[in-house]
Structure formats: structure tokens, C-alpha cells
Length: 178
Image (cartoon, rainbow, N blue to C red; front, side, top):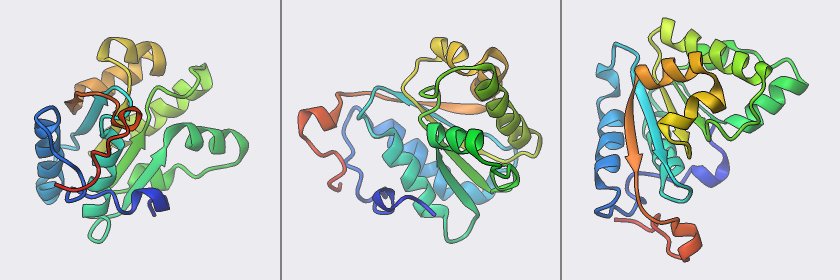
């Protein structure tokens, strides 16, 4: 299940602006047409902090969770759990949709890069879509997650750029509804 703070993050609660309209429409369309997806392509949501990437990823999860198996993970927490315990990979590899929030925020190491590659490659070979969120530019992603993983993520997912200020720092709430 989604963390409690993300369960109310829906498309209806996302305030659409001129800066995020295209991203909103792509994400909403991805969720609406999920049943038609056969090739395993997902989304790579890119943008600065506070622009709504996690909200849109959670909105996709909330839209699909009653019909499909959806797993939402905050990547640094998942990797820490994997480091400390034996976390089974099968739920991550077999879910109809995996959402990996905050890609690249984990500390890069050979171990984390290998774990990410196992998950990303496992989903690609099984044609399972993944939604990624990241604060990093495409050019910086390979340094954060490794060239092989970055190549798979960038080459097999639609790139969705969120623009705008950090609404959290502005004290404005873009998540207050349309």
C-alpha cells in the first residue's frame, strides 16, 4: 500500500498550471490507458524539488491500485532495507506497476548500482512498466545510477519534465485541487 501521506494524492487534487499541464496530461493518460500497455514502457518524471513529481506518481498509483498490483517505493528506504534485511525481489519484479520515487538520491556505490540494475532489467525483460521520479537531469543520471541502468531507464521510458518553482518553499500548495 501507499504511505498514508500519499493516499490522498490524486489527479483531482493536483493543481494544474501552465508549467505542469503537459506532465499532468501525460501522467493522467498513462493511468487511463494502462490496460493497453504491452511494451513495458513507463515514465521518467524529471524536475526540481517541489514541482509535483511524487504527487503525479502517487496519483497514478491511486488510480490503478484497485485493478492492478502496484508497488510504490521510496528508493533510498528500499535500498536501506535491502542492505539490512533479505528483501524479496519478486514483488518488485512482478508487480503490474512499480513506482520508484527519488531515483538518484541514494548514495552511489557498486552495491546500489547492482541492485538497481537487477530490478530495472528484470522489469524490462518481463515487459513490466515502471514510473521513476528524479531530481537529476538526464545527463547526470548515469553518474548517480550507473551507465547501464541509466541507459535502460532513459531508453525505455517516456521522459516527462516538470517545470516550475519549489511550491513547498513558496508556501503555496499546488496540491489543493484543480
